[in-house]
Length: 258
Image 1 (spheres, one colour):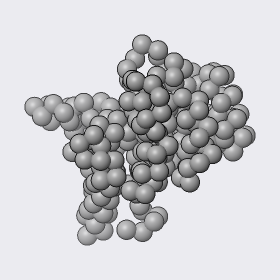
Image 2 (cartoon, one colour; image 1 turned 90 degrees about the vertical axis):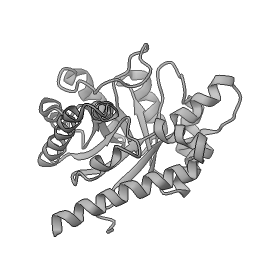
Image 3 (spheres, one colour; image 1 turned 135 degrees about the vertical axis):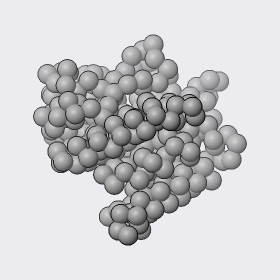
Image 4 (cartoon, one colour; image 1 turned 60 degrees about the vertical axis):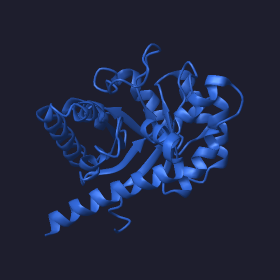
């Protein structure tokens, strides 16, 4: 597969830190996980520094920014505190996500349309520092148009609803409907000149249809990979995801060129 058409894989290492924090101390080390993921075929490392520091810590971000060779994608809330941290460490990219203290994980997309006035100066300051800004949004035309107005070069489409529908084997119609939303969102992102990423809840079983979307250039996957690593090791888990994505993308390209 040519590098131009190769789908990138960003590995989110948040939940290595979750396991570490359950007991305290230094083990397991997220930096070690990042290095294993890199050797296994990851193209980037994602880490979410939450307001309550429930997994990734400030020290983790400092070490990752300083010591890994892959691009670092810092997931962050659109707050002055997180902006200051991003400007201090200068990651390759910053993905703005919604964050509520009571949620277990990021439960929905950022309201880029409703939050324009708040988000605009944060996007501008990150961009001025040479940090590539991404917005984690639902595959909704209004949100995509808002991302364009905000001059964010990248959007990451929230795949959670699709993955939840996929888990319900009896609900095939909902799965197809959510897949179509993502397909239409990816096409609209490309039409608007936005680089399109996707992520949230992706597994070996459901990643193929998303990997096959030609407009999507990067997938960010974390919780599933770290969970599977308990059973099969992180190296083999990342390699299997890498191979599954590549196979789906190759098959999709082959079917379009036939």
